[in-house]
Image 1 (cartoon, rainbow, N blue to C red):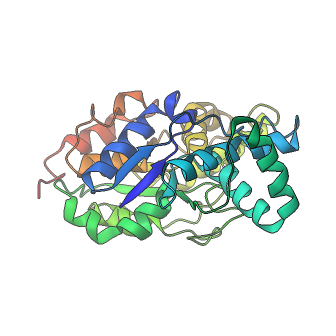
Image 2: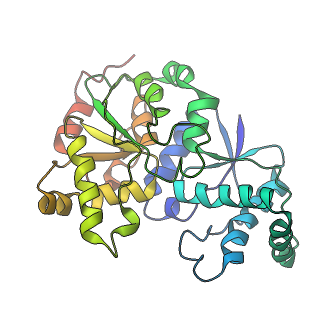
Image 3: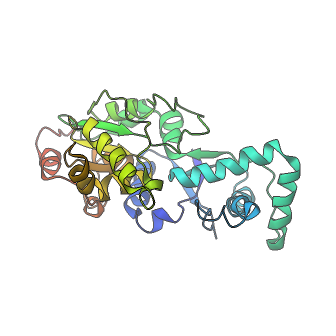
Amino acid sequence: MKYSYYPGCSLESGAVEYDLSSREVLRLLGVELAEIPDWTCCGASAVEPVSRLLTLALPARNLALAEREAPDADMLVPCSACYLNHMRVERECEADRKLAARVNEALSAEGLSRSGTVRVRHLLDVLARDVGPERVGQAVVRRLEGLTVAPYYGCQVLRPYPLFDDPERPASMEPLLKALGVEVLDWDMGGRCCGASLMATKRAAALALVSAILDAASEADLIVTVCPMCQMNLEAYQKEAIRSGGRGRPVSVLYLPQLMGLALGLSEDDVLLGKNMAVTDALRGKLRAPAAATV
């Protein structure tokens, strides 16, 4: 399996642990990545109020580069916001040929063109459907028994494009987690919004959302996610959310590839566990206990 790889800005700054652990886990699972040369920011959510064309042309440029470098490979994107922006180009240009022509006219300034042959894939989609839990289970060298994990998907990976899971009751992470030896928490908050985009403008509403998620995950040892915005929001604001809402307790929040890496034989340093802001002593103790048995 070979994919073009788009890390995006978050994975080269605040979420470097997500980038490194994703690359390492995919390598251990036999997945080959070729980073797209000269990729640029997808525009996130900041560009659209400035220019509708630019908000499409920025991710379209990355797709055009991916087409030029590896026309037969899907483009793998770990960040849910980046995934959403690139998917939007794919869908809107497919539905509107005039729009597609305008985007290509903008790209022509760099001698680029996008034809739409490259598919955009989220990391979770690739892990769940291309790699699969059976292959993950075969690669496990240290079963993480004794851990209860709350899988958290967030909004953008499945809304508005529910390509590989149910956005209301997502479950694609569960077989992967069970392959690691952990117990999966049965909860209904995995697809709920964490309020990340509200934190700057409607802080009380965002803190209430974070508090509700932490409260629902109170029986778990940790939350795992595949979204840098969700991870940052649930980590950085959990103390404030608990204080203001009076619910929940501190919970460790890891990226899915970080937890997978530990089960596949990587060390805490290998997956940059020290970069996480909210890793409880209780979780570290369980990770280092004999119960996390070597296969």
